[in-house]
Length: 142
Image (cartoon, rainbow, N blue to C red; front, side):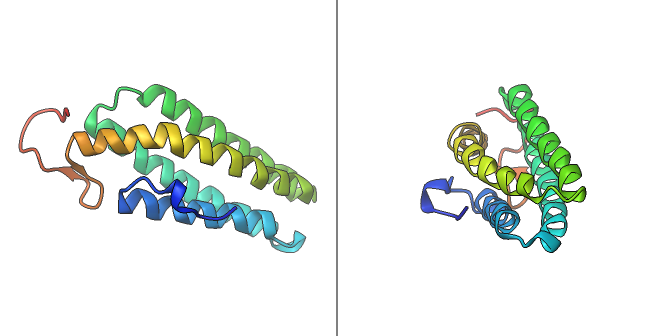
């Protein structure tokens, strides 16, 4: 998996987080057997923080599609954690399949759900770098 300009959403913090995700998925896919568990652990740590970051932005701006977005995050994180168990048992091919599947999933997720979130954050004038809105009062709305 590699980063392409097609994955960019126009928000530097989101794009930076996504570039890191892509690099970590790629690392899992290319990892030697003896390094795969470490690569998956790094992916899990990043993914937990990545999804928590987005969840915070959704909560701060009352993002309308929060429930659906978070359900998808939970499913993906659960799958990665499940694959970690297989890899810890020496089933390294499952880790490589995970990397292939995450490549497909992420391209779709970024183009749809994350794209909608990025657009919503722009409409709300929410600055992801500062974790705040440029609006001065009240619940954030576009």
